[in-house]
Length: 161
Image 1 (tube, rainbow, N blue to C red):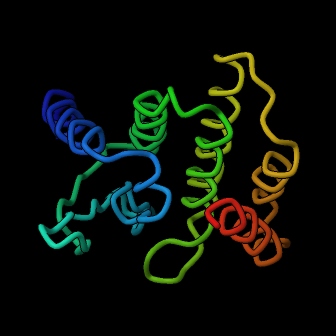
Image 2: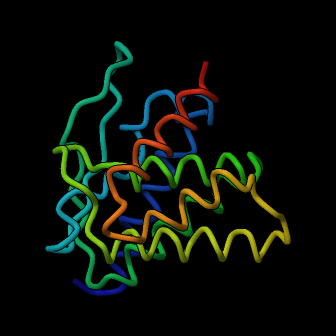
């Protein structure tokens, strides 16, 4: 895949994501990038049907490297910049939780998500909610995955109520 092909797909992806509000996005996470099958360099995007439901897979986007996945995450966060860093971290927490087939995201993907969190915070010179930040940071520890995932899930679910 050439860089031009990736950029065209990336732009279509971001255009699609701009059509949803953050409140809809938090409640209906499947509209976001689903980092499933990341180990073989693919991402799946959900399709929003006219009746408001989401179906998978809609669009399969091949990425040439892990860097592409990281850049896609960063680009998505920039599109959602107006919602503030806390909401961005909650969204990233959703990615960290579990991918759609019930397996944990690969370690390299969690690392990319954490790097994106750090860069967002640094760029905006904002200090995120410490509980969420600590949970995201700790999710990099393989031995505490289950505990951390549940903690992130509780944080998000509490906020959604």
